[in-house]
Length: 625
Ligand code: ADP
Ligand code: MG
Image (tube, rainbow, N blue to C red; front, side, top):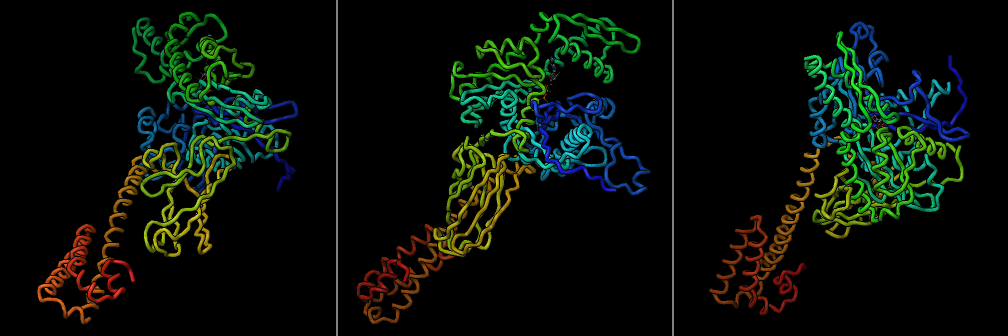
């Protein structure tokens, strides 16, 4: 039986976080968080793959069944019993190549599948999964929560991404949405979403600083707001700084306590450590609201009970909090603003509930930050506002975003020609015409790069593709039109067209997120090396064309009367020069060929004069006939 749910254009907003994910929607009164079936709003971004049951396979259930995939709180529990099958912080791996994440991998208990050089794959039990596939499990959970909540299917979403996410990371996030059965209508920068949740888009203009301290990452962004457009002026941060650092610090102290009280090294007992970690986190989170609390653990008949006061806690975490301040100052500097020019400060991320964090931010920005909304919900709420705009629930709001980095293509000499400059409002498009560098060239390699530097090698390589079957022409004659289009999600599409034949080759740029940095680097290096080779080759070919011309002219002159008027020595000199030119003709050395052409030119000078044959004389001078 088919159930008709009726048509709905409900769009949900999703904060796909490193530590926690959550979804929100827009109702008549504003954005609201969608709770999960357990009442929890936050879904830990953890996915665990249970071993498949053999009898299921025998029954021919090829697809994964729900019992095999565990997401959220339950998956977090499994970190203990099956760490090698349990993935957390997968956001760090999205859109990255193997080489990008060598440092990250050292911290992860799960394994990378062999052959991951092309496309990163996580080996979880006997199956492999790409990071977008893992993220999709989290998204699917959020989708299910929303469907249970509304009692109808939900197929459309807005997902947030860090402002610094590049094209590949954005594309990977979109892929995750698609795998989860969600039509991702828009990707929104997290700081933009946070600003939207606070309704800051209602300001005519202004500068907004968004301070985001989550579980494992710290991001600071400075946005400029003008006429409803959020422009990312600068971003900074630390990809390994957050609540986890505080947890580890407290855990270390608690482990030492336990050692001295119980005379037992709990650090070797992974279940014990995990339970103590839980106790430490609970104490930390309570301490944001009360002046003192207890870290408590009962384990194997032993009891640990320790009071911790806010004062001591603050002293302990001060170095961690201070580590956020340098990136803030750099960000302000990069944005080209002064502290006084910043109109609003927005607090994002669960760790900003800590009073010491709040006062540090207040001191730095000399202003009271926005803390009215829950800091771990504010990004999802903002995503819901954007979702409301897209579904038509919220009107009279124009929301645009900007591209954080310039986009361009490689041109001769390994130099970048930028088509779309950073901070262009998106959607954006740009068209430029290029030409070929080699005679009769039938293919051109379009190399798409992202970044601010002048040389290709210093930028990020996004994609390469061949524009084939172009009309072969002398160098510099072909006209290749390249069009860049960034859609509203910041995703790039490149089209190349041979203007002469009118043949358009529309190519969807597949970002190179499957490639390792090493490969990308090698590709770039190769291209530069080949560019040199090509140039060398071209010079050799040009020299040979010149040699052909003069040899043909000399051959022709040998039948001319003027040739017989030369002395024997003069004719011998010509023969010698011709032979010497023929000897070097196939050498890959254009200088040598040129030198012998010049020698032949000199010994045939008198002959040419005598012939008074302009065509031959022209030929002898190396001009093409
Ligand atoms: P992310 O954006 O990295 O996915 P969140 O914004 O959800 O993460 O932040 C998670 C972090 O916030 C965790 O380290 C958690 O312990 C911390 N956190 C949550 N609530 C509090 C609180 N009341 N006091 C201190 N830290 C908190
Ligand atoms: Mg976050």
